[in-house]
Image (tube, rainbow, N blue to C red; front, side):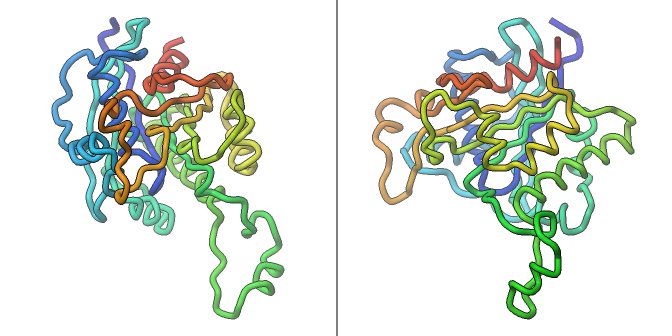
Length: 280
């Protein structure tokens, strides 16, 4: 096992499922059923306590409170004995909005951005619909089609591109490091209602063509992985607790889609595959 573990950092905007995936990942690690194992105890898992408790009761966890920021380090190891320090943040979506509006990466993000050997970006396709913006139509056309006083905003795809550009600039300007390997997880895969065997890269190109083009033109093919993810497998509501979560256990729910389009219940797979790509 290497003396210096790989550092993998997780990023994502609001309502993409970071907290639910983190809680479900911890459940898989505790059950020791996947491609990753804990290589020691995490110092503090309290950031996930409420979500874990909610999922065990068959209901969704609460959204992260505005203004909060915590970071959990999960020390894990792959089947190939690649050690990883997985940095999992818990922050309100307003932080990403503020980052983009102010053009400033907060100091609390610097260590994750700069030190990571690999990045994991969670993207919810259904929350990033195709839309007209200043990148797809002339500004004059957009203004003429909007009521007076209506502001022209960036589309969801443009926001994702800008987020990565800012993270890359911060990393390069402060450390001189090149781009890290990148895993894009298309979350809430179940709500897309796709045929079995659909490949995540195809969905990315169809649903987010601008973002997909940016990735293809800025990363080597071997350094980018695209996965599908449904951390819970179904939509959960507080009004109607899901009995499968209660009686089977949350650690048995949810699944991921590999780069080839195959489904697996091993939610650790995307992280392990990214670590293997970095290590190799």
